[in-house]
Each structure stands twice: as structure tokens, then as C-alpha cells.
Image (tube, rainbow, N blue to C red; front, side, top):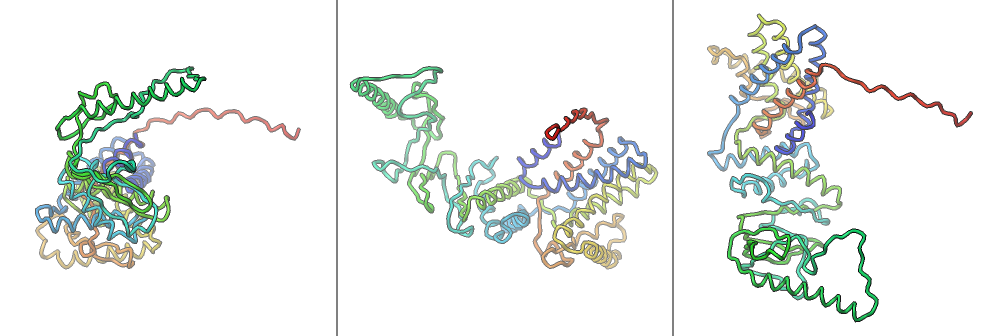
Length: 436
């Protein structure tokens, strides 16, 4: 089931998998300490459920939605793409590729999936030569006798060969000895191909989209596809057929260029992840701050909840353990960047404490102290200082962040609810008799 959670996260967002695993591991460390204190697993589970609910609630309260302002929303999407690409191979090219991904997603005009965005890889040049093509590219090229450009074309989509419908029969073979019989066999194959072409020419359906043909015997029942323009294009050393103005609407192809196949494969995965994050953000346009700021905000809210449930001591300890796990994420970010996490976290707490003292007189009527995190100070890894995530433009998808918290909690609870482990008996070790 844990692998199933990871697969769902990858299929839906393409990102956040590492965050789920790291947070789940921190929760498991906390679970070990709680179990050592003889706290019932069901109590731990209940406390974590309440902590998860509180964390998601405060995250939703502080999430921003700029979808009504298209220019601002596009800037938010670009910042989210830059944040997503920070941990990928495209770190040095994140500005260019973030704009490329945002342009591709916004061109979908609120479609339900990413099938209308194709990614192809072409060896040669460098990553900066990657671009978007308006249309669908197929790595094939027309025969020398076929026009290189066809307008208002009817397209027949078939997954069979034109020459002959081959039937698979086991343990069978054809033996032809005399030359006249071989010539006769070739003429039969040509006649079959000619018959198939005549069937295509007789079918003049005027429709918008097409069906996939599996046999030429049912050609009159198949809808033809419609395309405004088919032309041959050359990218690098590869030849493609470009389909523009297709019936399904606007389709786009992201053409990736690179020096080696390994680089292209890594770039493709990074672009795939970023496109999924942006696509989900367009569907759920709320955003939150990255760099660990949202985790610290949620941890503060969860700690406040733990203080309110002191009458249930064991449950309160479980809730506070969830907050401690969230607080570990900023430390892990700093450690992963090879900085002194202790010093950075100390400076971070000092910055938040200072802001708390400055604005507390203005918000003294509010109960929740964690409103001070509205300013979202956090760690700027590039400069090794405490900075404002709003000014840095370090944004993340609210929907992605919420699902990371929920699924990390579910993953940890799966381990918590394991009653026993059945170990297979180890097989007896055979004695080494080579030297006896």
C-alpha cells in the first residue's frame, strides 16, 4: 500500500515523493519514542489525524489565490515551476524552462489532462535550444513521391500494415521453388495493397476526429481524422511529420535538445514533473510558500493544538510529535545544502520571535500566536541567510503541499498499525566443501 501511495502521488503531481518519504520517516522516529512510553497505537493514530487536520486547515487559511489576476497568476505559476526545478538537473536553466512549461500548460485552456502536450527528445545543440512547437510531431517522414505539405487533410489512423494482413499460424511456412510461382506470390501481395488503397479512397467521411483502424475490412465504419496542415520538418538530424490544426483542438510539442541521451532523459523527467505540478495548480489555483516556511507554519499551529489538549496527555504527546516531525524539514533542507542547520534554525527562530514582539500589540486580541508567520521568513539556501519567501518568489502548490502532509501521515500510520511481522525461516547454510 505504501508503494501505491507513492504511485498515486507520482501520477497526480509527478513531484513531492521525496517530501512524503522524509516526513514519513520523521513520523516513524517519533512513533518509536511514543511506543517506548507505552502509548497505545490507536491514541497515536488519533493524535496524528487531528494534527493532520489542523495542519491542513492552517495551510488553507494562509494560502493565496491570484487566479482572478491573470498576470499575477502567471507569475505565480512561473515561481512554482522555478521552485519545482530547483532540485532537478535544470537548476541552472530553471528560468527558461519554467516559462516554457507555464506557456505549454496555459495553452491547454483548462483541459482535463496533459495528453495534448507531447515531449520529444532530439540529440544535438544544448538545453537552451529547447522550444515549443505548435502541433503534434511524429518521428516519420513522407516518401519521396508524396508532397511535403498537405492542407485540409483527411487522416486515416491505422495500426496495421498496408501491404498484407498477416495471420499468425504456429508451425507454418511457405515454400516456393519455381520463379513463376514467386512472381505470382508478389503479384498477390501487390493486389492486396492496391485493394486497401482503393478502400481508403472510397471512404470520404467529413467528420472532426477519427477512429483507430485495426482491419481494412471495416473501413466504411471508421471515422477519418481532420487536420488543417501536415508538413515535413527537420529538427537537428531527425525528420518529423508535423500535424497542425487537429480536430481535438490545440496540441503542443515540447522539443528538448541536449548533448547526450542521458541528459535528455533526466530533463524529460524534470519537465514531466513540472508540467504535472503546474497542471494541478491550474485546477486548484491556491499557492503557499516554500523553503520550509509552510512546514514551520503548520508545526506552530499543531503545537498550539497540543497545548489545548493537555487534559488528554497521551493524545497531546502524539499531536506534539507530529509538530516536531514537521519542524525537522527545515533542518533537513539546510543539512542537505551542506550548511550549519543549527545556526540557521537558531537565527530563524530569532527572526520569528522579533516579528512576534513587533506585531503582538496589533494582534493581541487574536488567540493564535502563529499568525506571526504571515511574514513567512525562512532560509535562503543560496545565500545561507534567513529571508522572506514572498520576496524571493519561492512558491509551491497548495494542493501538492496538502497531499504531501496527508499521504506522509497515512504512510506512517500504515506501519503503526502493523500487528506483527512474520519472518520466513532462514535456509540452512551449506558447508563449503571445495577445500575438503
